[in-house]
Length: 360
Image (cartoon, rainbow, N blue to C red):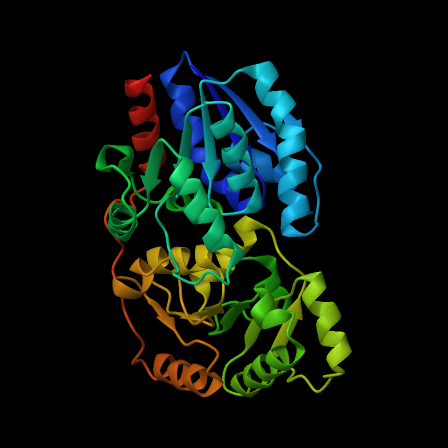
């Protein structure tokens, strides 16, 4: 059985790792990895691949940043010759990036079966490019591997035949569980004299929060205020730093620590020791739910509602007063507690491999 994995960004590799390992354990499965190069990520070093126990990609398309249309078109143009030459029996795509839908479109036209890992998630907000990618990929896929029951319900509602839908659990949690024992106390906490003390971990990357200068200024002012009560650790993407410089906002609290981005293991170590997390990332909503860390999401909606329904996540939207109220509640011991969703047990990759091999 020839399986082609197409990934486009660092989180995709973290989802790929447990699936690839489980398929390799079955034997008689030949696997090829294509990295589209959709996102250039300096943290994807040799150490990154060693930690995940996956080899360097067999192909790197080197697409890079561009508009959504240009990026998808380049991926399709560069991927098609590889598929025609390799003749895979199945394509596996992950998540909701442009690489996901572009690869699915190429293989659908070539009549190659498609499996979508992390299928069925919906924010019901089509202003998010990722929502379009999710919907289109799910319409093309033959195997839809969902992380939680809401994914099944969404797909059934959209008319997807039930026999295509497989509730397998969350592959991101597979990787978290395997690497958690290796995530000690990050050196960064020692350097900032935060080791053993309460702090807030912040991560923001969505354009609606960081590209809009007025919105970013409102968020920074609020974080500055919160830092007066509890130290904040904020790994800042270089692009966000450029926007911040344009704001000429220099009066940061000494307790608002703006640091460079960190690798996955170090970030995992920061998460597990944080008092609370403020984010706009879908993956971090899931990780904090598993870790039992209170999470405040600066978004109006989420494609991962299970983290709100069962987990430790609260949507605060873009309401900075609500953000401050929820922070106060957590610091006073009245924060939300949650439970780990069903099948978030570290075995999702194995379930996917078993389904694919049994159906081969």
